[in-house]
Image (cartoon, rainbow, N blue to C red; front, side, top):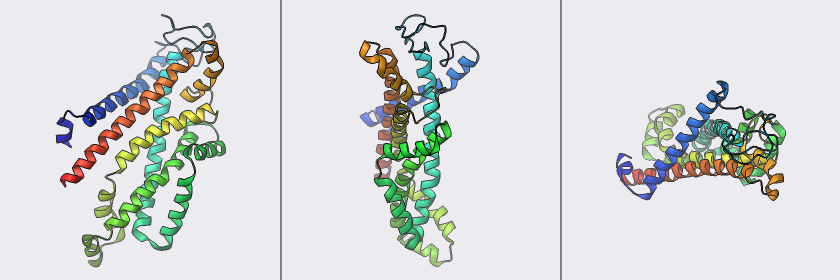
Length: 283
């Protein structure tokens, strides 16, 4: 990995560019709420004293929306919300999908068939459709949106870990450990876990990028977060009415913020994939 990071190739540059982009978004998510609390910048939820659909100016760098709210502040505040939802969703998917994949691949038999059938059924449903159904059933909210996204990505981690576990458990050193009386939990923790997790970081970053888009889709459909929480998808939905009249700023900034975050996470995934592929070749 150190050798890869010292190289000046396209994958390395994309990896570091993605880290820089993600770091900027994390910094925004930390400092913008603090600045709003200290009243250094206006709250993006209130705009009754501002003109509606005001063009970008010195007072409002990104203009105002149809309620007079500052588009710049709302776009920046939505960054932290998006990162929070995506982090919780992907973390829950990893915590559920990986243990189920290990259990299914190691035990096999009826447990494996039942879990594979259930996960394959979820996997065949389109991502946005499944997330819309889950969001509709759970209701709007940060935790509910995270759970709706979590259900979408659990089958991916399950399938990845289950397939690798089924391959690794047939190795001679695994059979030797079992024949010497090693418990299943010890074998999984000592041998299987570290061997099946090599591809998880790549899938995690790509799922995070996809989750940003799915969250935006839920917000666009009115199924994501409550109206009092800044969210790029809901802002894009409200911007549709004004866009044909030439009011472009209510749509361009949330859309750009979503695009750049997805791009940064995709760059990190591309770099991680290259790092892991070269590491596996060296080993």
